[in-house]
Image 1 (cartoon, one colour):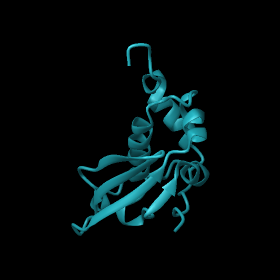
Image 2: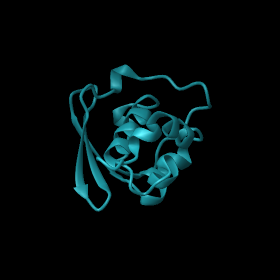
Image 3: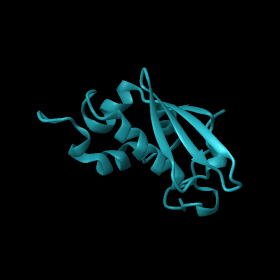
Image 4: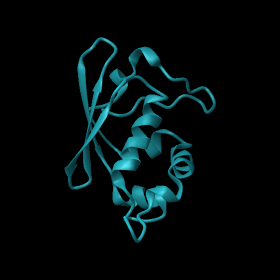
Amino acid sequence: MALPQAPPSGTCQRNRDAMSENPTVEAVGDHNYVLHLQAADGDAVEVTIYASPDVIAALTGTIDADEGKVVEATLAYLLARQGVDDLPAFLELDDVAGAYQGYVEDLRGQLGPSSRPGPDR
């Protein structure tokens, strides 16, 4: 299942009725994360995201970035633009970057240097 087509730039609105209030992100290994969400009707929704090292590097400037932070930021980005029920069961960060023209730039600005590991992290 592919991501719904992104709305034109500047027309994104948060759909609060179909948004999960307390999503959780679970690392399951090999750059995969399971997002646990709740749809507006109360049904549990799980979405698996593959955090491609190439996209992580494009977003943060390093392949050693905190993938979990990138996935959490991506989830927030998606939920600001579409409802939980519209998310596919599996997606890759590459898919999000392809579907949303401003995704890479927006996440770069949001993540900033805090997503990069430092000497004491």
